[in-house]
Image 1 (cartoon, chains in turn red, purple):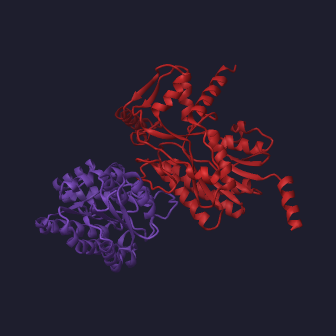
Image 2 (tube, one colour; image 1 turned 135 degrees about the horizontal axis):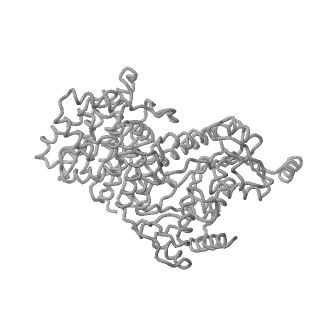
Image 3 (cartoon, helix red, strand yellow; image 1 turned 90 degrees about the horizontal axis):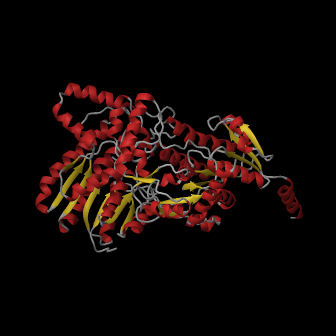
Length: 345
Length: 281
């Protein structure tokens, strides 16, 4: 017993945990990598283009050039790692050909799982999305609730299929689990997934921004720091084969603007009825077929902004000790952060 | 929640179109009896529907390709004293392969579920439906029973059976205050496999694809109105119109073209040609 304790503590104190992570140039992944590195872990980051990953400068972060679709590069980067965070994904509303969703999100995930089994990692956390649950009806959705809408969206379908793989591997004995962040907001990289920051910056500059004309439609907004912390908690406490919704408060567009207007006054948010946005989507789709310019959205992908997507994080709160920053506080912090950044020379 | 109100029995309710029908019926405040294969997540669906719509939901995990399971279902529903006034025969198995590639095991299951279970359950529940009139039977056919598509041989034939059976039965049961409807949906994004396959069709077949949550409200409303044949979707209705107007050689060119591109994506990450999963309509 004494020998065991000694070994246990020496490994604990002398050897930092090696953690493999994908998606580190993304919004959540970047913050997670830095937080893990600051906590004295050795972070193995799989990046497609190490030259562009300049916000990953940290003595504890090792960059590995690779791709989720190249399993050899994954295995090389995962060598010696004890834990795996897989966040990389093709996160867009629409793309043609749609194969890219399946290639990156499904096959990429399968490659990560395959490598994790071969490298004998002890725990794996896969980052999915609340998009897999679809829409909520009269009550907030929780992990066991069924999806009530079809798979018309490629992203949703690909993330569901990837989840299925993770659960299959978990059933076969890999300690793998899933986290599902909701709409994430807060300071961080301004990537495609960070819609909120882009809109806030536009508001601060006095630009007009479009807002869906359905002030009472409710969605779940999670503060990015909570989600990052939630990932670490899931790695620590999460049960294999389980899913955990990492969200925040369920609030309506109206409530968002009540908070935002406390600090950014003005009237530069235009309520857009659904049919107008649909028409815009249609025009963009036509333009795509004529000029191959990718649309920002299409008629079918905007439905999600006009239907409620309320979620309950009760499971994560109870089982992971997950904590939610109140929306008002998170939002005000975000605006202050953006203002500060704006004032810097 | 009022368990004394009559129940709507839906087969194949765990996924796809059946799930959408279940949710729509709950929206109409109907109590539900949901039937699906064991391990298909019915319990979660039931608690979700009860939580969101305050109706009573009973679940039965049955394999309706087995006749004994059909009889058991009927007896258990009677034992619980549940009064059924709407029967929705939705459970079915689709097909995606040429006949020469299809195993006898597969098409036997398909015929048992699509034809036998529908007919048997209808026969078993008609006495209850008579007692509770006005009552309804909704059978799920398919648009492909009108177009003789390749890769849909057995499936299309079973759905033609459903179509004939429903229309004929409707005339018999009219006096009994039972309205029989048949819905003939086109392609829908139901489960993983079908949704993935739907993405590989040509332009025309892709724009005809609907989502189950769009189709279900149309279908339940028309069923409640006692409509005989329900064809959801403007593109599909237009297709039916063309079917009546066009000469058959043009239709052949047209449908050949429709099926030609229908193949799995370049590297299907999940085997969409798996033999067994029961696919809704």
